[in-house]
Image (cartoon, rainbow, N blue to C red; front, side, top):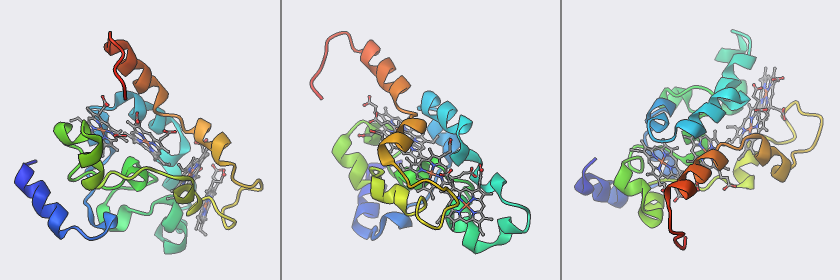
Length: 156
Ligand code: HEC
Ligand code: HEC
Ligand code: HEC
Ligand code: HEC
């Protein structure tokens, strides 16, 4: 990934949805803990809950595999929540909290969860963001590792 290309993309980029996906295996190289947790949870298999006929039904895919048609990445994947990683997943970009967001990294919000976890999902209980967030925790392990790797506490 070249800086010039990034600049170009920032000039031309219009919507976050326009950023290409790199796929979860690419994120795994640098975020192994996050990948493992995601892999164990249902988002990574959301499409598999559908029957073969339903897997062709756009009404089901909007939540169970929303980026497959455009980006060839099935299920509810890293980039479904974090945004397409085409420009942000280079290491020097990832390390820069401002640049990484300019390059398309999204901060997943309660509102974003609710685009799928709404009244039309089959869950009988209302979506409780704080509780549900705990169930998809794929960040604590990495944050612990980072903390341990930094002997002198830095301000963040
Ligand atoms: C080449 C290695 C690399 C790849 C590939 C990579 N990341 Fe990162 N990522 C990092 C590094 C390094 C950080 C910064 C961690 C730190 O603060 O020490 C980071 C930070 C992050 C953060 C937190 C950023 C912030 O400022 O809050 C998120 C979220 C993230 N990565 C998601 C992803 C996703 C999703 C993918 C795949 C599309 C991905 N990363 C691919 C290396 C990578
Ligand atoms: C608005 C988003 C949305 C749409 C559209 C949607 N689903 Fe779902 N579906 C969900 C969510 C969210 C869950 C998980 C509910 C929970 O456990 O909180 C789910 C769960 C399921 C489950 C249960 C999986 C399990 O592990 O028990 C099945 C089966 C399912 N959906 C089938 C379908 C089918 C078939 C369609 C199309 C007719 C469809 N869904 C359309 C959001 C959606
Ligand atoms: C359903 C949405 C969703 C999916 C799918 C998802 N994430 Fe996340 N991710 C989040 C949320 C929400 C947070 C922030 C949690 C918090 O700070 O409270 C997060 C946090 C992170 C962080 C920690 C950033 C930091 O500040 O330390 C990394 C790294 C990360 N995700 C990478 C990934 C990778 C890699 C994948 C796929 C293997 C993935 N995520 C899949 C929603 C998601
Ligand atoms: C693109 C749609 C989509 C988004 C966005 C989304 N989810 Fe989901 N989620 C689903 C679907 C579909 C399922 C059901 C998967 C299955 O069982 O087939 C699900 C299942 C879950 C489950 C139960 C499954 C498990 O792993 O035990 C939790 C918890 C959850 N989601 C939390 C969240 C949170 C928190 C967010 C926001 C940070 C979020 N989801 C964003 C579609 C989505």
